[in-house]
Length: 287
Ligand SMILES: NC(=O)c1ccc[n+]([C@@H]2O[C@H](COP(=O)([O-])OP(=O)(O)OC[C@H]3O[C@@H](n4cnc5c(N)ncnc54)[C@H](OP(=O)(O)O)[C@@H]3O)[C@@H](O)[C@H]2O)c1
Image 1 (cartoon, rainbow, N blue to C red):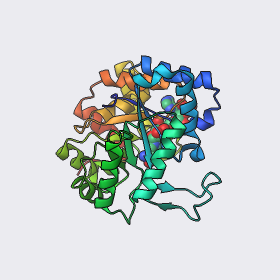
Image 2: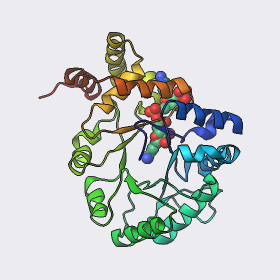
Image 3: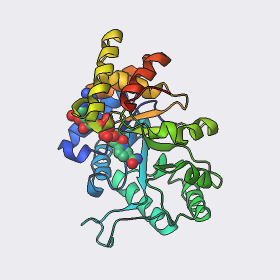
Image 4: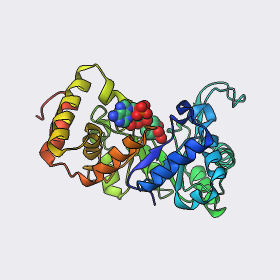
């Protein structure tokens, strides 16, 4: 359903692009085989979906060649949503349905390929949410559903009521939690391919001045030289090496950075190379 590398749109509002530049970026991603685009209603303070939608409207044939992932369930305090008094999470039928309608309008499309619940709503009623997913799918407005940033037990609870298509999680050599807290074990167990956000730790892999960032950067640099690729490519290859078959999401505006991610699809790291990077991130040896 999704391309093996997904292009993330979180930061698009800060790229300052006009519509032709947005169309060009989408076309360049497609040319690299990156056909899936990751959004959320809240990105850019509720503005990014519309930026993308304007690009789709400017070049309508694009829609048939790409998949749209978007998220809902976070209620930000924002001038764009004057009804939100405090930040909260909401997976109620009313909120999810209204969010989907807003997203479809902003994205100027008739369907969302994959809808994710962005953060775990502590008041989530799995019966109600599964029923909401069912209605949205029956209406053809949402084709697949999943979650993001849930615990394994929260994922399991909802998965018993609705076959979740993915779990979008954070993973990088500087953020190792999912490897040890059961999240990725569960993905392997259920055959659910995780989507991975901030695969380069939000850029910290390259700019971080802390000890772990420096250590990881050193190992990535050595392996990059060995394999004749960029350090970013090695970082993506580290993610792709996991048996859950993750789908990394890029975050860059630069098409060369998206190409770095695609290049990782052809770089199978050895287990020892993988553990060198893990050890640099964890800051310790295995016991
Ligand atoms: N589900 C969630 O809760 C959640 C949370 C966060 C993000 N996401 C999704 O995941 C996507 C990716 O997250 P992210 O933006 O944090 O990804 P990332 O790839 O870890 O970080 C991207 C940032 O790193 C910078 N960077 C510095 N050096 C780079 C290099 N050599 N190569 C590439 N980038 C470099 C980029 O700047 P340049 O633009 O200058 O390259 C960009 O600002 C987002 O767009 C969003 O779709 C989801």
